[in-house]
Length: 436
Ligand code: GDP
Ligand code: IMO
Ligand code: MG
Image (tube, rainbow, N blue to C red; front, side, top):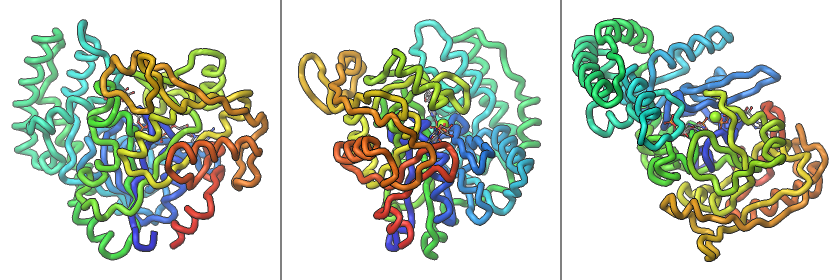
């Protein structure tokens, strides 16, 4: 990436692909890591020498003291969640002051966002999305409605007071009328958030200026995606999506750099697929294999603890994800989780109403009638845990990866064989690019 000093790293499916681990490994080669979308609905797990960190809002790059972290304008920031994460890092001996920066243009999540979301999710007659209940959707609604509060406004106490008074009155009225919800107290809310604002203030800056200066001076910048391509508000399995642009385009609008600044796009995919929450999942399985994957992969949500739905690798979905993101490199995680699978079905196409296709349908009825077409690959039935060289993988594991690469249309750059930072292999061509 000598000519190309930046990379977007994102989830190729419905989130939890292992982005956190991979961002942590790669951040050694980058000066800045910037989050561009979502909020504390994300849960990015990093394990370093057995020590576990789960980051929700703060980019995983900050776990390396020499790497700066940026929370971009595309993120929705819950000040309380932010401050509690900052405290957790400080308590773990990571003094992130001077290392972490928050965009003055990021939107703020306030308690009435969570109130509205919880009430709406549980209201009769509504389509339940199975959200993380963090107020993400309602905060993005306010942003698009042009009635949100930005971080820069959070720091202006007069503006904050008026905003909370007006917005709280409006949201209380809506929530009471639609859902019978008890009102929130705007005075207490203002006092709590004014105090929080003082603690957030030292982190706040114009991060777009900072990122563009970094790029201009030749520093390497990584854009850390949250969620996954199929949870993207435009390109995902709508309405069972999150409310932000989690795909590569979001890195541009969510941080304030131009599209010409993006050097490459790295998609992280599990060797199989998982999903949390409601919505279509063509290759979902419910048999013993699902139990095996969930147990071996510890497939429980990092944020909500919910069991993740498990299924086989879906190549039409991965090709679609690669297409909308312009993915050049793939990172395949959790190979070790499949070590005990006797046979591994991989979905190579869909049959929809008798017709063979590999196009993702736009409407839910299309998803409901998908019958996945599988190619069965033999399992390798040997341990891959901790292997860091491709040639040392069992032959059938190598063949599985080669099949995935051939069929997905993107090059495999890295393979992960365990949750720890050290349990990772970087393939030669990708390694050469990183070093360039
Ligand atoms: P993210 O949201 O994409 O960062 O992913 P999560 O952290 O929510 O979920 C991924 C889970 O898989 C975490 O518990 C990681 O520690 C774990 N993990 C990542 N890579 C591997 C791997 O190669 N093998 C195994 N067994 N676990 C992994
Ligand atoms: P990371 O970054 C997996 C899912 C929720 C729900 C839908 C909408 O850790 O991969 P929201 O609270 O965003 O309005 O919920 O999106 N979801 C995730 N699933 N990983 C995530 O983040 C997710 N963030 C949101 O489960 O189905
Ligand atoms: Mg996660």
